[in-house]
Length: 120
Image (cartoon, rainbow, N blue to C red):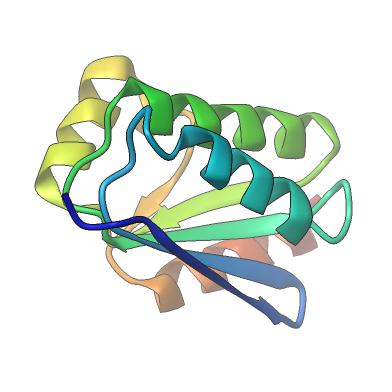
């Protein structure tokens, strides 16, 4: 299993969180802690770059959804980008795609997140 690697970049108006590796119960706490540290404001605009995530189980999904719920509750927006086939199937089965926009590229997701910011 590829180890989970996390990185982020604060861009004007949005934070991009790049995730690489498999997301599962073995690294759930690390991912959750990292997201708590990265979020610079309660109403953050977040883009998750998941192009490096070949596999995600319900533990990884739970962390993403908890972060997204908290962000949305506080007036922020969350978008996902580059979702690979297995995580995409998980999002489809669970209905996540109906609530969190998914984009083919990070650039598309950042553009959409910033547009959402202007319409709020």
